Amino acid sequence: MKCPNCGLEIPEGHMYCDSCGTEINFVPDFEPEVENEIDATLLGMADELNREEKRRRERREKIKRFFSGILRNWKQVLLGAVMLILVAAAVFVFVVYRNRTSLYYLSLAENARSSGNMESAINYLKQGNRDHPDNPDIIFRLSDYYLEQGSTEQAVDALMLIATSDGFASDKVVSAYESIISIYKQSGDFDKLSDLLTGSDNEAVRALYEKYVPGMPYISPSSGTYDEVNISIKNLDGSSNSIYYTVNDGDPDASSILYENEIVLDSDGTYDIKAVAVNEYGIRSVIASESYVVEKGAPAPPQVMEASGEYNQNTMIVAVAEAGCSIFYTTDGTDPTSESKQYVSPITMPVGRSHFRFIAYNADGDFSEIVERDYHLVYTRLVSTEQAVNTLVSTLVRLDILLDNTGKVRGVDGHNEYIYNSVIEIEGAGEYYVVLENHVSYDGVSTPTGLMYAVNTHDGAVNRLGYDSSGKYTLITISNR
Image (cartoon, rainbow, N blue to C red; front, side, top):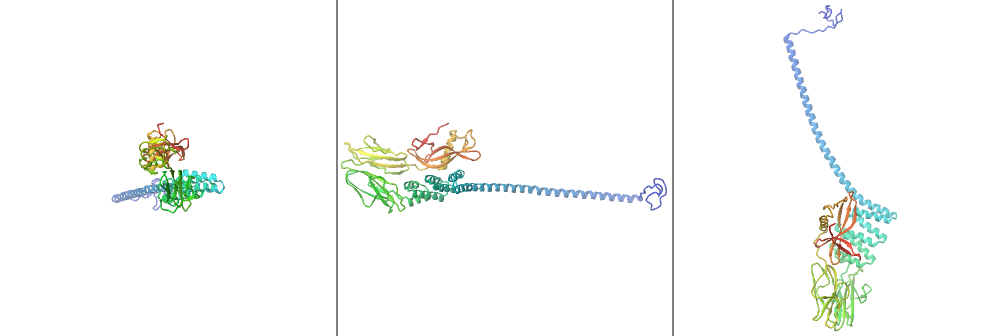
């Protein structure tokens, strides 16, 4: 082989020209057929390599799509789990916050009391009650603190928040009543105890009434004018409660005359007989009273057909006198005379409590004994407390006092809320639910506005509630602003 550069013959086996140093490349000579076969083989190998590379790319793409799908699914699962955890956490925080808030006020109050600062302790409990009006523990604690201060009326007022509400369990209501009973027993306010338990719809409370308060004794005959009269007094409930009475000597108590035999009135004069039953607890009943006139020749007292008592429907009061006699009556507690209003036809019984006094006059001007009747007319409750609140809100919306049923007020942040408070009776008007108005700001703080509303328990009539000059409740007609 010759050097391609200088032409010198290159000895076999040398890799460089000995003359010029040029590198020698040995390329074997191939036959065309062999070269074609090599080319075909190389092309086949290239195609196979290309196909293999394509398969690897397809496998990588499939794997990539597979893991991308798993990643997407896991993201959705993870997002759902996170949302579930957040919701659970929010519920947990809400529950714990409320519990802690109630306990928070109780703890603050107890710490203040332990430090000798009872006023602060009571204020903490008042605030706790405003924030958690449905928590009875705060109310019971507040009552206890008032008792420690010697403020029995405020202690009773606190317990009445439970006793007069429909929002507490029956056992809590009974506990509140029993606590009030204990306060009244210790203070000797037996009349208040009787008033407390009278007329409650709670079955358990009615049982307390039967346990603690004796029934009013019954005096017979009824008030009237007699030539002579023998008076008997007994317990209508069949109990063995002791009965004490007075004759023209004020209200009886356990130091008065013990009733053992009939009382005989056979001398001219006027006699006021009052009797009270006293049970084993030393608690007195409502006082029963009758008045008698012993006088020969006087006309018989008028007969009033409707007995004193409770009524729940329209009732006419009918009075009858002897022939030739006229009947006169009063409703203001004064003694009737011939100058008083004359009875000429049945009288419609007024709504609420009323006190009638009747007297008969003959043609000679002689008059009978006075007949007294006490009535309490309260129509059946046809409206619930919830209906009363809804009716009030609807009325305020209709009068454009509220913008909508959520309590929104034009131009004022937050909204108003209306809360049932109690049931009252307004003389001559009937029975009403008392609903208080509070304003709730955007931060949730509830503040009394000072406005009270009265919703009739029978027909749902809505009025503003106020006081007259004597401090009695009065109804104020609602009008457009």
